[in-house]
Length: 124
Image 1 (cartoon, rainbow, N blue to C red):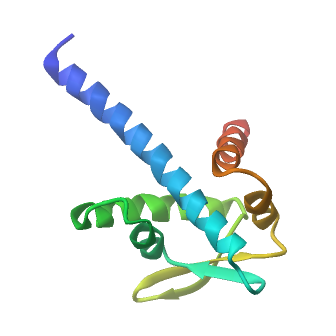
Image 2: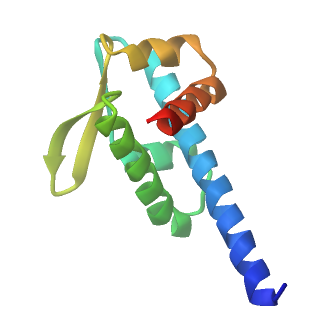
């Protein structure tokens, strides 16, 4: 195997593990929001998810926010969350208490929720 092939393989692997971590972190954030909710709606922006977790340096924040936004848009498309508002600062996403995803986040551990989402994606 050539060195370039090895680098490509490791980059692909890192991208996949990074994507998995981003999804898991996002679900953990949503779960925390649901558990601390006082009302029937939780709203958030992708940048808030990235900032609140303090896991990445400032230089990575933009790239991670893009991955978070892509995951949130996927959840919107699947009917788990909704877009509350669009503005110059981007989208504000929301999760209603009446939504089954709220219940899922309340009951199951983040790893289990992600496992369910990934298995559902494969079946589609």
